[in-house]
Image (cartoon, rainbow, N blue to C red; front, side, top):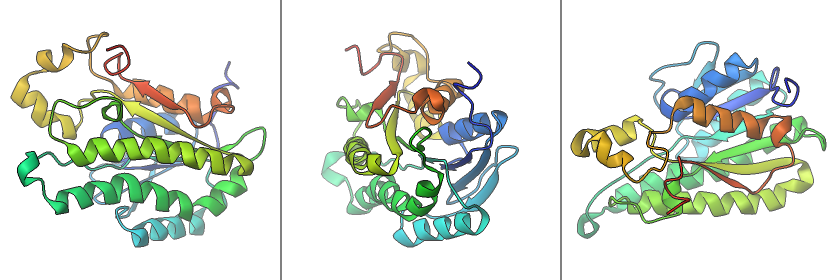
Length: 248
């Protein structure tokens, strides 16, 4: 069982790793013995044991700069976790192009171009028995219509799910798996304003398991997909939502 979920010694990159889901995932990989790099536009906090690299992944240039930094330090990347994301909520009549572009540039374009830029390092790490892994963080908002007017966010996450399946089909020949974690309601900075405005009880009402997602839930799912236990899984979307979007 220890070998089945072992990620010790793997080189892991977690974008958006300075807070929220990314922070929890990065922290868990460090505890499991991986060599972990995190990146975000502003490095608010760094989990102990991680190396932090600032990068604006909403631009192609930023993706390539991060890949160059990693290539200068490592000969391979075993696991890439594309977690960095942006949210914009506004009424339909006034929803701005700037909000749409900000969300899609980071949530979709950034996922594609960082994966592209890191392909040489991922291919070096990959073997048939132990593939390199790309884990993209999607959302349950790609499964259902969300309660709030987050048009670009839900559309971008649906795009991430489909992009991941497309990449999985293409990269299987290189022994690189591509999967998606689709979190439910996680008490991050993104959700805090809604919790403050509507109250935790109302947000928990539609969740069958009656709690928010926790860091351990996201970390456990990521460790599964990154370890030998998940080596034969690709093109999958794994909801971690307490049944919120998957049982309605």
